Image 1 (spheres, one colour):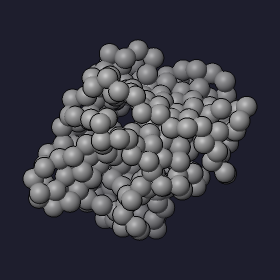
Image 2 (image 1 turned 30 degrees about the vertical axis):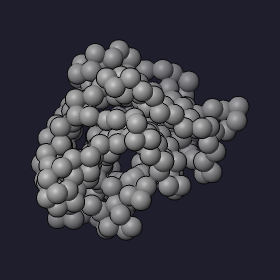
Image 3 (image 1 turned 45 degrees about the vertical axis):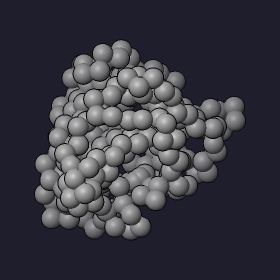
Image 4 (image 1 turned 180 degrees about the vertical axis):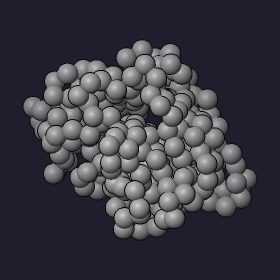
Length: 256
């Protein structure tokens, strides 16, 4: 989803967010490998335009705490959105209200609306997810694939053209989406685990940048951590350090 740029907070940089009926993507503000966003937490490899052709991820669907009020969290892998106006992404969404939690899967080529997986593609807390986004140079299109290894289904997008896609970043993100122009409350996802150290899926949290396939923390991939904050600069969610260049977790702190 689209990253939202907000008036500067001292020492902060803000990014893009996600859009379906929800909208997922706003821009961050960055300094020395660290960035702060109103809607994203996780990591991005931030590179020159035209550099990214592929990104993949594995994660465990977190157990979201139920709430009475409406709250959301999206977890996804994607290309673009850190410093440009498109995002090519796929992931899962958890929505909680009335004391219940509802999970679903989706892909999105922002600024187009997101597309949800059929209800038969069931997502549950604890499921192992593997997903990737690929740029197809021959047709100048993008394709997304999301596989729920635990439940045994795969949800893919058609090859889709995305005008003005810069291919200048790859991301592994936990997000609070927006409805209209308003950010939602961030559901308490507790901890979201990414990468082979936690999932056992080798060669995930990888990207192809300038033709080189490597883990997200590869030399020259310009890895940037992203902490989600509110307008007062208080932390809502933050990533751990990256282990073995591929694995990390994001911890929930507050709803917004």
